[in-house]
Each structure stands twice: as structure tokens, then as C-alpha cells.
Image (cartoon, rainbow, N blue to C red; front, side, top):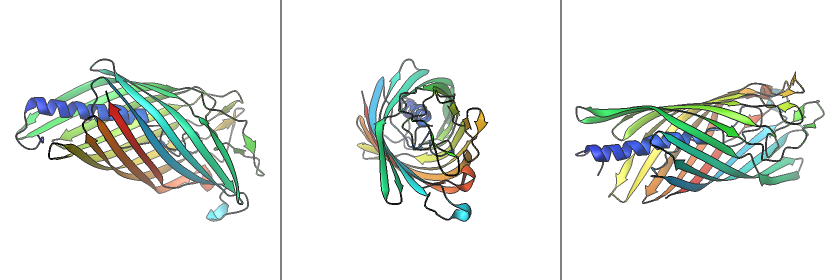
Length: 320
């Protein structure tokens, strides 16, 4: 039964629960899309719509991102210009502890490539494991005329463990630390998250924000703190009561402070980027499949010496 035709309250409640859980999951993925450790503000959001689970959910997620580093002044290339590719497969899951508390976690496996002057360097291994907790601040819902309207707010915090291998930052010929090509930050980092949603029938708009606080690693290197925010719209279409398709589109803005190396600011780091993202989610029974594609609209990363390219994410999830 679709919400826009002969809606009944139990059906609406079921769909609202799906929506609320979506934001919890979306918050968990903030900070995990693409290169989260590059120190230039790149990466870190996913705007897909994921399904309801009663108690537990787990899934696999593939993410691809690439950067062009050491760009010459004026946007040109030189013998130092390098393409870095980041392929990540996440094993992730969630557990509903109570109606207001949910826990999420992910274990990434990274396959990184660095290409310079025809020479390819590879680095593979487990990345930084992340854990998140969320609390439902409020959830107001009800009928207004023939429409069902709801709005809700979730808040949470998380920790990123230094499980990924971190190698001592290499210096290039400019004296800067080439510190994008890593499996992990080597530091214990923290996140603060919020998500607000407004929904009218099958159409919804939500906004999220995540602030990542990085600490200093064993080499006395500290990646810059990063703020990530998203604004997304989506619409759910139920097809013959067999499956649901939810197209979605939105914007993401990310800004990061400069890194510090032995308490000294690393000049060619930090920056900001604005992206457009679009995707779709398909849910049938206890299985969900989705994809999301993102493209930069504007960017100023590492004083223009780094350029972010398009990103892709696909996933499959199972509800228990």
C-alpha cells in the first residue's frame, strides 16, 4: 500500500521508521566515502536511502575515488603530478539497541594505486575501523489534511580506530609531506553527527552534518579537522507491492583545516569542495541494492595542488 493512497496510521508508522533509520545509516557513512585521510577535505559522504531493519543489518559496500596530486601552478602538470586511486570494500552492520538508540560500524579493506610517469605503486590492507552511536532527539509526526507529515532529529558521536597501516610521510621535492597515499591515519579520531529530516508523504528532504576531530599520530602528524554537510531530496515509488525504488539527489559541502607536522602547519593541505550527487535504491523483501554517483561542482584543495575527480559507490544490504 502506498502512503499517498488510502493511508492508514500503522502503514505510515512503518514507513516513518524506515526513514528514521535511513538517516542513522547515512550519518554512519558520513566520513567514510572515498579518501577520508587525504588531509585536503576530499571525500566523505553518501546520500543513499537504505531500508528498515528490526534488529540487525549487514552489508557490503564498494567505493571508488581518485585524486590528481602535485598539480603545477595554473592547473598544469609536471613530472611530479600523480594520480591516486582509492578502491574500498566495506563490511558494515547495524544494531537497534532500543527505539531511540542505534549502533553502527564498518571495517574497510583498501586497494590503493599511485601512478606517476608510468610507474604504479600499490598499497592494500585493512583501513581504519569506525564505530558510531546515535540517539533520537525527537520524532514528531501526524496527519495534516490528506497529507502525512513528519520531522525528526538524530544526534550521535563516533570513534575511528587506528587499525589501518600508516607509513611515515614522504617528502617530495618541494619539501611537502606526500601524505594522501595511506591506508589509515595512524591516529584515534572522533566524529560528532546530526541529521534532520522533513517528510511529506513519499517525498522527503534531509540535511546532515558531521564534524571529524583528528588527533596526532605516532609520527606527530595531525590531519586537519573536517566538516562535512549534505542536503538531499528523495522520493519513494512502490511497484506492485513487490519492491520500492527511491531515486535521490543532493549536494555535499566539505571543508578541512590544514594538517600539522610536528606542530608546524603543512601549507599545501586543507581546502573545500562542493559536490552534486545522485543515485537510487531498490528494496525488495529483506534485500536492498543501491548506487550513488558524485561529481565536484567546485573545489579548492591544498591551494589548488590537488584535484578531486568523480566518485562512485554501490552496495548490497541484508536485513535480519
